[in-house]
Every structure is written in C-alpha cells, then in structure tokens.
View (tube, rainbow, N blue to C red):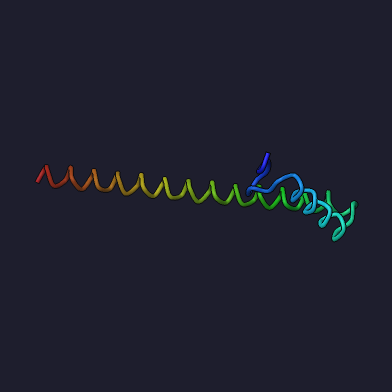
Length: 76
C-alpha cells in the first residue's frame, strides 16, 4: 500500500497535498480550478492530435512523392 496514487504518492502525501490546496484556494475555488485544468488538458490533447495528424499527412506525402520518383526512374 506504499504507492496507491500517481507519482508514487501514498495516502498520507495525497491527504497533505489536498489539505494544502484546500487552504490555499478555499473550497469554492477548487471546482473552478479543476474546470480550468480539464479545459487545459482538453486543449493540449486537441493540439497534440492535430500535430500528429499533420505529421502523418506529411509522411504520406513524402512516401507518395518517393514512389512517384521511383516509378519515373524505372520508366526512364
């Protein structure tokens, strides 16, 4: 039961982190902070997916251009 949570944090450590956040921001601000965190994660994932798609498209274009080049060389 040493590390139940992410990053190897145990129950006591998570409790102290939660209490520190509660003291720093107050109970009313925590939902707002979590919404902001969720929105940031969503935007990050959207940007990551977009970049991955662009990279895949670029790789496909390079492969198609290479195949066309090889085809032209074979015909010559």
